[in-house]
Length: 392
Image (tube, rainbow, N blue to C red; front, side, top):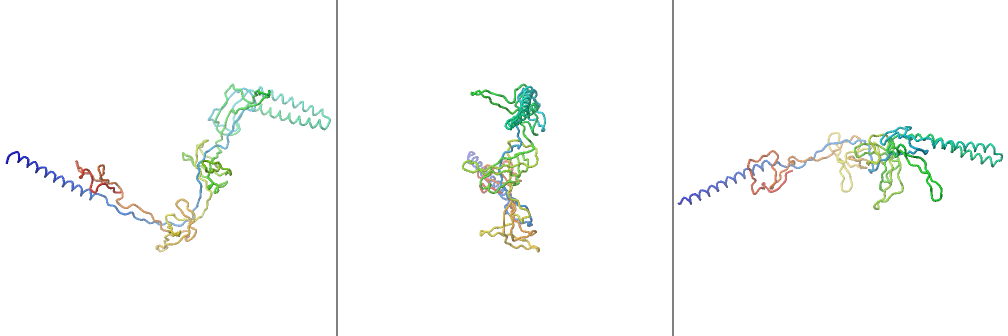
């Protein structure tokens, strides 16, 4: 035999031995993987007991609405004049009676003096009147003149403008040197018209309301004085009462929407004009209602409801009950049980081994806690035994 043939035969035997060893290692690792895979068990029913008890049942409608202050005052100087001082800035909190600003008193003083002169003249005419008709006319003139004096005096007092309500100044629309108050402008017919612009806006912080809408079905359920639980997007919780339910709906996309006004009760920090709130309108609240967990009740196809009653000696009896309304996880029991009765509540827990993931295939993962040997490559081109599957 030539040296060439001998070398070739030795190489062939070497590859056969290497292939056999590889198959043995792959088979061993496969067996290890199968043994290490977690086993599954069926989900188990776990039973507990609950006691029939007296609870409060509520029925409610949830809507969204927009918050706005009940008090929003636009304040203007009652007299004409030039602004001498502006004593507040936007964002400042004021109390009723605080000074907002002042104007000069020249025009207001002149108006008061003229009104007083007119009143004196009317009073003189009354003194000179001798007939019944003249006396009646003079009395009317005096009354009108007196009203003019009162208005002029109020305007003079108003040259120092004060806050009519407590709240936050949300806008200041005047500056020192501005001319404000009633002004006259000419018209085509030669007459004049008076105008006045608000100088300050004050929004109250103690009284709020929510404007919302409800559908036709909900509108039939709610009423004035229903209690309301309110919450803002930042988690602030407040309470209120339905103060008005509108009878005339608006229509949006063919759906009727009835306006509802909710008055906020009490006080709360962090409320702002225009923020969105969620309102839960409670239209029914009943106390001392006999209830059990809804999970304790089984309802058959014919509508019959039953519970499993636990007797004093620990035995279990299937008992027919009449159910009423549900609220949250509780259901009302109208008959069939008494307060203090114990009933079985069934729940299910996952079976053992139903956690963790084992996925075959090129991107598969090993069972929790298993570390493959260094350099290990799954057999069959990277596929774990059994192909692709999932455990848990």
